[in-house]
Length: 311
Image (tube, rainbow, N blue to C red; front, side, top):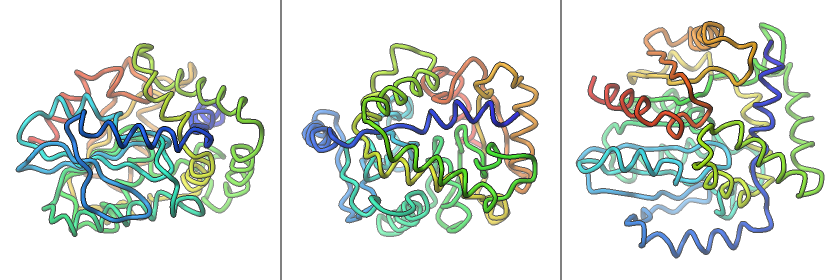
């Protein structure tokens, strides 16, 4: 059953081409002032932080694999005044130079740097929202640094993606050979084929055709090595045993798996099982949306976000 989902999921991860990353980074830097935000004075080889608004409340928004902070533009606009929004830009994604993310794991060290940023910026238990791989980093942050997170929203991500790559009960160690094989495939081969796969992936992850251009550009300007390394890490990372360490109120927003055999009810069962070790979490499915739920169903997503923050 999970293998069918994986076909879409694996393709969805193939996001990013190295040759144009430097050019995209230049345009990103020159557009900051025009978009009304600034970059936090935080030195890191893993990420940089875009800050919008003056507060007094703080929220940290973490994008997913090969994505830019722009995926949260509509969310920032919806939040409006009264918030200081800290948008994470992972090095190697969407035009940012790879720096320390060029080798090895990405999600875990970035999560540690987000923790350091929260401390050094003096944020007091901010709301943390993470989409996809950003959700993984949010779970890492909340489980490993529970004193730093006020509330956690995970958007369309499970704590062990490797479960999709094997039979029920499969372990992280058992899926490691598959992860290595996928990593090799993502790392090799012509860029033209890679870019075509990225375009197909974005198409499957966003139903709203008019909103695909931004994520397509993010994919095109991401560093292929970083995307491949991060995806391998996601497959072999099992956070289920760490979920009980999360003390912050948590909500998981998700969509039906993009496979005709996966009914909403089956999707619900999978998420309930995946988060069984965090019994206090609220699980909410949003229908008629693909992976970028905040693009396809902004009204429903914002309603969930507002209600969660207000609780």
